[in-house]
Length: 319
Image 1 (cartoon, helix red, strand yellow):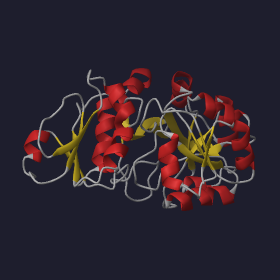
Image 2 (spheres, helix red, strand yellow):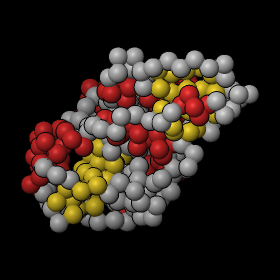
Image 3 (cartoon, one colour):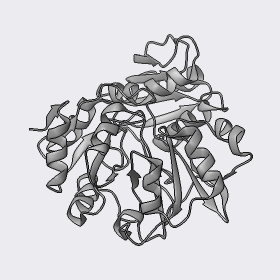
């Protein structure tokens, strides 16, 4: 039976024994283990059924810890760290040899961030090592945004979920790498591309890779419900083709009336993209449990956080 608890000292004990604990962050819950323990890191990949070619994100509690883990900090990386850490920004930099190749999928770079969640930060400050913590879900499925999502996925095989409430941002961090010291976006996330460009200028986008990805979240199918899911501009017109199906809808702000609709999740009745992002995965979890024939999601306005929501929905839906 997986323990759900707020006891940080219990989480410290489990992690010190090279076991895994799911931890809350402001983005999603992460499946965490000691970055220097081969046993723990292998357990992360095995529990998630995650391919070893897909690198992990290392979580730290202080910018000062970068000096221990990376060879150099590009000037724009330092600027971004000062602006967005703690927060939902992951940065990929050249690693020191102390960072195990297992975490970085054999690459000479490592992805790092400081989470913006009090329980995660208190835990990290209580440990003598950073934590690798990809999302606490089986590889490719919907990321968890509360402790019960995690326990449902890993009941009886995960020792503990550190209870930290609902994740307020609700989708994963934005990932920025550096090629010849210039920033490159590898994954859209809960800080918009526009917000980052206001700080450091124009950024090249390279957010898709099927082989040897530079960062997590670059594969074309990811974050997906088990129910067949479609992403459409005109939901009403699309669902009229399926009069005898049990359909679940995921929309931005408007209700849609149709006899085939068993349940509809409206992500933000007031049309707020941040609120919609925060509610996205929890809504998908609810729809996925309803034994539907299909889920139909509405395409979002394609700017700022709408781009990040569309990115998740595109990777979750039938091509």
